[in-house]
Image 1 (cartoon, rainbow, N blue to C red):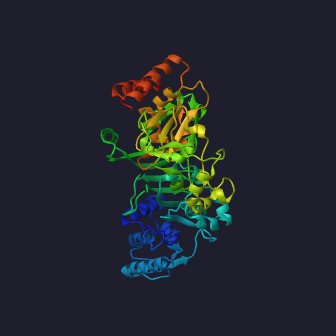
Image 2 (cartoon, rainbow, N blue to C red):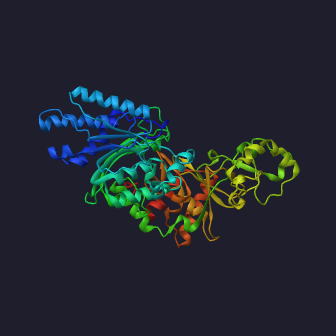
Image 3 (cartoon, one colour):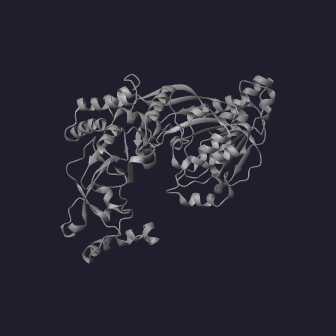
Length: 529
């Protein structure tokens, strides 16, 4: 894998697919002596060789067809890994294949960090299932590479470690070489992957993408994998795509039924990208809908609303309680969980309370004495160590005005677009986002109707941030959401009246009127939806 203790070995089914598509890109139907003799494949995080062993056996069998006998070339496959024991097992696996076909030769395997190794040789195929490691809990791993020339060139805050393996793979590919990887799909729209996406866009073209949108590894949850094959050439234009998506008809009837269907389609490489350089895997019909929404919209959400994340305490046990602590009444605020947010409305009463302590708080000795039991934990927080906050303050308290007054609130992660209205104190954690007016003329109810509509859901499902089939309502994708905000006050008041009714008593009849308005506004038919 490249990082010890981060091993997820590639099942044969997916190894075969990765190599099949990599070979397609390299041979392009021309299985000649010259191409077979010249092929050089590398895996920068080989582990026990689940990819290279499949590739080598395929090459040896191919040699029989071309030369009439089984042959082996030691330059065909090269392995790098940091796990010495895995590399030794790789060598044993290669020897078994050589013995199986009665051929002999040296085995090229290197123990070491492929990312920090100056690899002079160029390869025409790079295969990989690199380690999936986030920066947040692995800062020591990132620190060493950030200091290197390679790391300085490609490091981006909050990136995943596997980005480096793609970038390194591109660097050691010869012109027209092919990269074929299995990775997670979060990088397609991640803010932390702009450097990676730009490099891939500037230096080559995608040949094949299979977006599984779920984990393909047994007993590994929370991943959403994809295979992609990319060529270091600007000549190839068309990409073949398999994209697993929700069966929306089933999902509408039962939101717990995440049945998948697969779309198969082709796109020109430039059609893969949106205007912000994110990669959007969707068919041409959906792209037409996206285009209509963009053409009709006259604002981005960031033009109309402030978008803020909720509180980060740094240690919830010290600040959040189910009990109303009467002696600290003046510091307590009603605290809600994301599950307390429904479509249009919120839970009537809070179950929790938060000690809202920010830089403006005049804290008394009694409360300080109470918090003393948590002081050791609180003082370990980064912001306390850097003297940005006092030890008894919330780590990120935000502006308290965010939580009071008129606002739209949304769960950070949920299966559907569930936005609610509140004009009272509604304090919550970072898994809640708060949308407030940029100026007093903005009508929150009109925007709430749009955010809870099927048109918005369609847009965000295609273009917004998601993890598997959960939508993720983070600041950046919300800010970039296009919206039509009418000049005609009658239109605004029409939606406002319907939304106010929905807040008091939700009805499908009113929701249909809201849906019909936005469908007509964006010139999208019922069939297209």
